[in-house]
Every structure is written in C-alpha cells, then in structure tokens.
Amino acid sequence: SKICARCGTRSTPLWRRDPRTHKPLCNACGLYLYQRHEDRPHSLIAAERATPLPPPDQAQGGPGPVCTNCGTRTTSAWRRNKAREQVCNACGVYERTNDKTRPVELRSDRIKPRSKH
Image: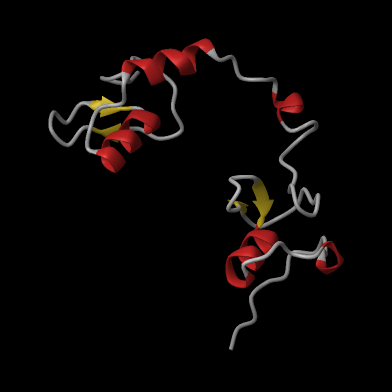
C-alpha cells in the first residue's frame, strides 16, 4: 500500500507523484505542490488531522449534499458560488453567466440532457 511522502497518509481519492522525487503524494499534498510550487506545510497537515470529519449523515444535515440556493439534492454536478457555498449545476451556471443568484421559481428536479444539434 502507498504512503504519502509528505504527510504519511495511506488513504486518498487520488494518488499523485512528486515531480522532483517521483515519490507518491496524496491528493491534497500533490495539488498543493502543483498550485503553489511548494510543499504543503506541516501546520495544515496537523490541523487536518486534528479536525475530525462529521459522520456522512450529519455533514449536510442529511444524506447527500444540498444546494444552498434552491435546496435540491439532485444535479449532474456540484459547484461553488462566489461565496464558496455548494450549489447545484443549474444555480452555479446561472450565477456565473448572469452575475446574480438563480431565482427559486426556475427550479426543476429534472436533469435535462443536452440537445444534440
């Protein structure tokens, strides 16, 4: 089993590789290095270990994520709005293109497939 060369974790959604040493890095350490061109600080690693994750059912007040704008639980993709809140795909795209929050009246629980031209 792999171990992150930076923080020592054994579990990660995606293993990455340090471009300098070619040693395995966890997703968090690998992304930090890629984006900031420096190793993930030990203070962040220690803070993450000290903060326990809430049980999955209590993380967002129930099973699965909820859009903070319209309240839906079904979407093709989850996004973050300008305030860094989790929103559904429709609300996220609407806010990005119109520079305002999506009106709740536009909510539909149906995921619409793209039309093929």
